[in-house]
Image (cartoon, rainbow, N blue to C red; front, side):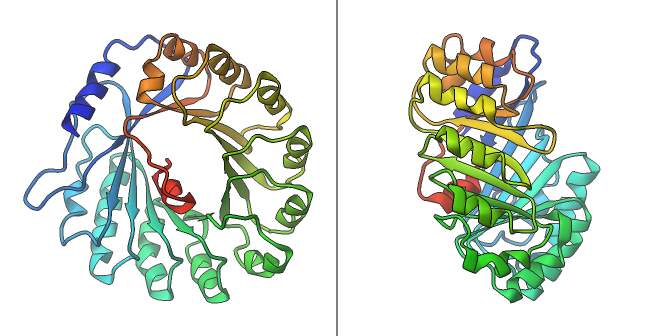
Length: 324
């Protein structure tokens, strides 16, 4: 990890002035007992930190993260539900980061909250923390009621492997006005769009392993409460396939993001990204450093996210947890 962060420091020195908003997305290990949280060398660049907890944090571990070093954004990924014994620690670190102006989010993977867990997170929500639940199941009425108590701080990422069915509508209607994200490996068809328009919540889509048709772009524009499309490219699109995204309606409340997951992009790929003018583009450190890529991307008005660690694909739910 130290070599990786050192590489980031070397990479970041002397970057040219740019319109793009460049972030370095780094994996940072949780602090060990009796140690200060691992902090990279200070520089003038923007750092978004990801830290994963495979088990519950030990007492005081979250509090040890209050000094965030040079991080301006932080994502904590928890593989276990909120623990009553950690209630004060969640609040302490959220309050500290809020006072420092650090944007942050807590991600909980594999479940939706019980009534008690929602009560634990309520004070954290009031401090401005974004709470993201990542699940592969449709919410029950009980879970939906618990989520509603947290209101606007909540996002639910559904890695169902499918889009909502008509038979699911009442379950999703119970999440009224909460932000929903549907993660899939294909673009929606007519029946999916019709169902999405029956949901009373803002909806964003993350799609990988697929290229849309012209008809599917038209259908995306018909999703009434669509707040964003994030397209992960693990294939080499053709020029006419890239061109389809010029038809995608966008704006301040409808964002478009791209993520490149292959090897070194071709010149025509980078030029297509610049022409598409996404709100965000994500590339690996190696691809960012490739000849000509950095300079061209810096002409963008949007956000560039440089991934400083390898995101291994282990399933929709796990990879969703590692995304910013």
